Amino acid sequence: DQQVKQNSPSLSVQEGRISILNCDYTNSMFDYFLWYKKYPAEGPTFLISISSIKDKNEDGRFTVFLNKSAKHLSLHIVPSQPGDSAVYFCAATTLEGGGADGLTFGKGTHLIIQP
Amino acid sequence: GAGVSQSPSNKVTEKGKDVELRCDPISGHTALYWYRQSLGQGLEFLIYFQGNSAPDKSGLPSDRFSAERTGGSVSTLTIQRTQQEDSAVYLCASSLTLLSYEQYFGPGTRLTVT
Image 1: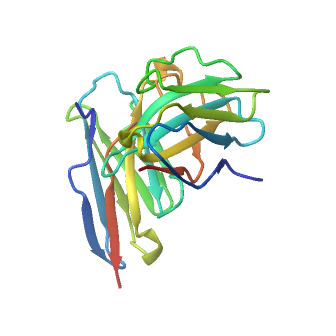
Image 2: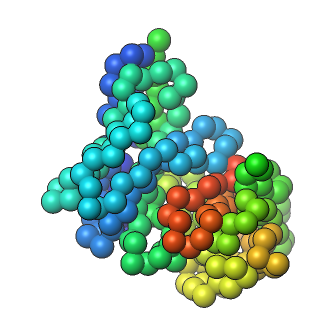
C-alpha cells in the first residue's frame, strides 16, 4: 500500500521552461514533506522541504507547493536547466514521530531536460 | 566536510552466504538510518539508530537482517543466508539529530544475490 505516490515515472521538459513534479499522499498523519534529487550511482540529495503549516516554500529556482486538503504537493523548477536531469523523490514523515518513523518515499519521477 | 560513505559500493554474493554492509555517517550526526531500494521501487525505511541504540527493529524485512552501531559512528547491516529477493541498493543516511528531518544519504551498496 503506497502511502506516497508519484504517478509520473518520467517527465520531459525543454530547457528554460518550468518543470512541475507531482506527488500525492494518503496518510493524513504526514505533516512534513521533502524533495530529494538523485543522480545515477549517487545517493539522494536533499532539495527542499515544507511543513504542513505552510502552503509554499521557495529556494532559488525550486518551489514546493502543498495542498493539504487534496493531500497533494508539487515541486516547481524554474527555469529548468540541463543539470536538473535526475530522478526526483517525494518523501513524507510525521513530526510527532521525531524522525523515528523514517522517511516514506515515492517511487520517483525521472526528469529529463531537453536542450 | 566528508559526506556519508558506504562500503562496499557493489557486492555480488551467492545465495545462502552472509554479507555485511558498512556505513560511515557524517561526523557529529547522532541519528543514522538504513533504507533499501529494490528495482523500480521507492526507498524502503528499514531501521534507525539514535546514538548506538535501535529502539525499533520492526522495519527489518526478516530475522535474517540485523544492524548495529558502535561508538555512535559506524554502522553495519548484516544479512544472513542471503536470498535473491535481498538484491537491492542499500542506502544509509544520517542526520544531526533524530529531530533533524533532512537526512543526508550515502551513495549506497548495490547487493546482487545470485
